[in-house]
Length: 111
Image (cartoon, rainbow, N blue to C red; front, side, top):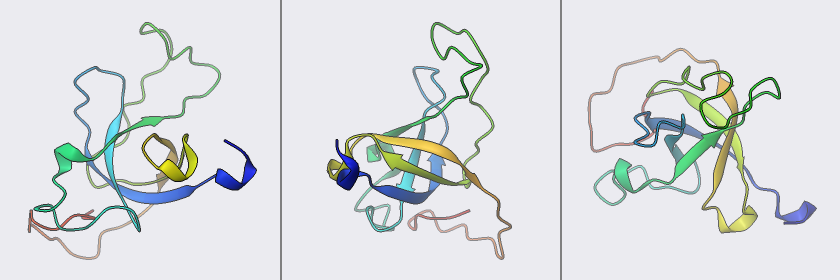
């Protein structure tokens, strides 16, 4: 990857239950993923890995836990593989306050 392949994103977390216990989350990314969960179900979104501080080994259960993100959290990150956009990394969360509740499970990007 070179400087020109660096691709940022913003998205909404839809799944925090990483079966491998690594703290990964599934994120529906604006401009990349469709909001129709019938066309792109949550379980087909790629796992996004959180970046951890250098005070955490992030290996073999050593260090701090990346468990602060919840479903509906807005996150910002970048793709480790650039324009291929298959390996998302989360840089952090974006503060927010939902304006209304939407319980329509067929629509993504819900906080």
